[in-house]
Length: 508
Image (cartoon, rainbow, N blue to C red; front, side, top):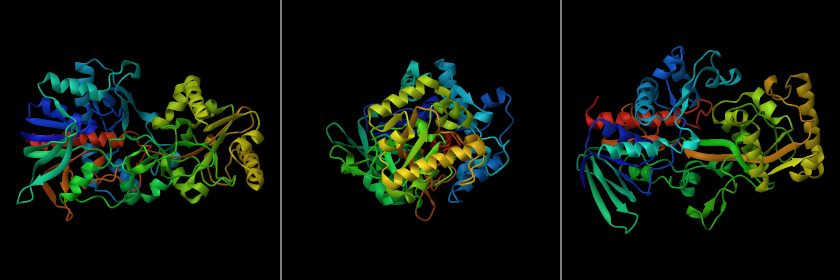
């Protein structure tokens, strides 16, 4: 197969790159190892979009935003790569709007201001600092997922996706330029050579579905994870192919861990054996994400002790649990859970608990109770028994609850410094309790890139003909994901999808 541009992967980044290439009439092909486009991740972050301006929002402080992202990554990022997203994401979101709203009539929902800002206690800078707006691209009941609409869009323009075609190997010539790939049919295993005259864009996802890579590259994140919400197709093959071709892999892990990995009492963090899972290992949690787990309620370890300030970004509490027995913790709240959640006013996807109301919360409760992972009891003593506390640990747990009520009455967390508005009483039945660890959504440790989206080799020099976007691209995150800055990862993915097409298509 001969083409100018080859896009590997029809997930969020790949199908968006295809739409931009199609809109500009470029010669390209897309391959995807599965039989369909991948699931839409509907939240994405952008800076100073037209919609924000229409809503009367003041421009973002881009210098502070750049500084905050770098600080969150402990400086282990390339600030020039971050700046591309900051400076060009507004254009990205307008291209999406031209398709979603203008062509297909699917209303996009934007979030600004207080709903998009970090709580003051989590922000390094002043509280009027504007964080990215986020969007939700479709009404769930409509089923009009963005990736499905983008597939329709490229088909209307005469393009398509070569499904059930997987990446086997990158090819390069004597000068080191990437000239294309060898792919393999997932139906009959025959090989196909794709020659790409202007370049290859890899958009193959991260490696959360590959236990071997997870254990080798992120032993800490793996140890505290109890459930998964990743795509099983994300096994890191694109990253491996790029490394084999000479690309530079980030040296720092950056998992996207959500504090929602609900499990039964007695279950530890980390993998368990599984005959049916890839690599023979899986995480034990039966539910992808228990969203109320993100609320800053009282959390205790297996000794019944409180061990951290629970008002924190999603991944902070699960990392704190790495130092606790079993690397898990219990969350406790009472009948005022929804009133408390509204006062807590958490942001990002954790806001679903307060915004969804009784129906949403009860649905999550029913699912978790049926799975044997959540307990609803008339007394704290009964809850302690259900959660598995015995002997001295039970006595400590009951004393911890009593102490927490004292702190609530004082409106002063003398023990860990949690803001008063995020304290809650535990006195009114029924009482809710469960054990939690991390739910692994994806990984963001990827192939190093420059501000044009070009892959870098081990000398940090651009690799001619090779571009990377999405979760398999690096240089942006380190340690973990800045989860209170909702949508940054997907915003980065879509911005660099356009950037790569511009570079290969001569549009910039």
